[in-house]
View 1 (cartoon, rainbow, N blue to C red):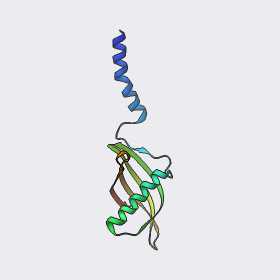
View 2 (cartoon, helix red, strand yellow):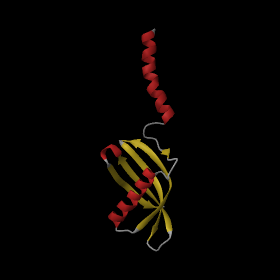
View 3 (cartoon, rainbow, N blue to C red):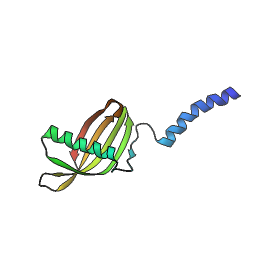
View 4 (cartoon, helix red, strand yellow):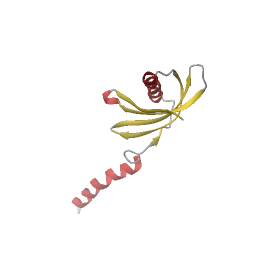
Length: 112
C-alpha cells in the first residue's frame, strides 16, 4: 500500500506543477515590461534589426510582451520605436535567449 502511494505521488507531483505553472511551451504574458532585462532584449532587437536592414530605428519603450519556455526563452515583444525624424510606430520582435550561454537571436522583426 505504501509503495503504491509513493508511486502515485511520483506520477502526480510533476503533473500538478505543470498545471500550476502553465504548460511547457505555452505563452505567458510579461507582467513588468519595464524590467531592465526585458528592455535590454528590446534594445537588442532594435540594434540587430538596424544592423541587418540598415535602418535607423530608435528604441522608445516596450509596449507589451509574452514569453515562452523552449530551449531557453522565446520573447514576443511589441516595441515602440521611432525612425530618425519620423513618427513612433509599434514593431513586433521575436527574440530567443539562452542566458546560460550568453546567446540571443532575433528571429523576426516587423512593423505592426
